[in-house]
Amino acid sequence: MKITIEKLKTYRIFDNLENKIVEKFHKKLKLKTIPKDRTIIKEGEEGDSLIFLLDGEASISQVLTLMTNRHREDNREKEVKKISAKDYPVFGEISLFSDNEKRSATITALTDCHIGILMENDFFAICESHPDIGYKVLGNLSRIISNHLIKANKDILKLTTAFSLILEK
Image 1 (cartoon, rainbow, N blue to C red):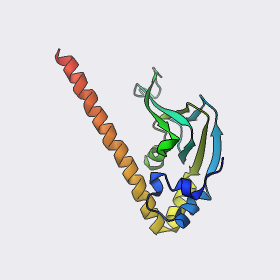
Image 2 (cartoon, helix red, strand yellow):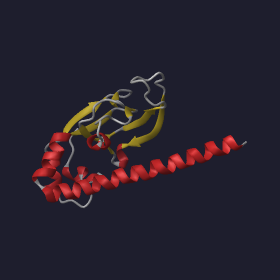
Image 3 (tube, one colour):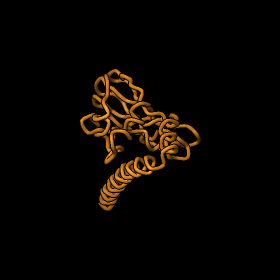
Image 4 (cartoon, rainbow, N blue to C red):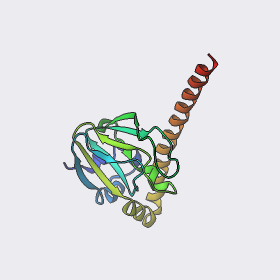
């Protein structure tokens, strides 16, 4: 699968950017096909890239239990969300900015998926060598992460409210 600059511009990380700017990232994108039912990224693994879902559908899941004593006693996962290339998702951004650089979720291909991989060192090299581009792209990425955080906070509020109602009975 080939990806055009115009297609890449549809991803929110590149909102309001000119073709010549997006082209810098386009040149560094590595394309890969992931077969159905295969893991794209695994929770807890080291994260070193942003991943663009170019074609297909995938499932985001997370382990239900917290890590204790440096290992997990229970590895059951819960599907958090299904994503589709039609929504132009980018994932892997959290590991680029967290202290431990670990993936925060597992993403599994529900169909054959085509992905674009932008390595962390390429991403930051472009941002550092072109501060004006870095400012715009990191601003877009900040909005994406903020929106994810706001949604997660709302979900936690709903969950704790439901849990407290159950405990009251």
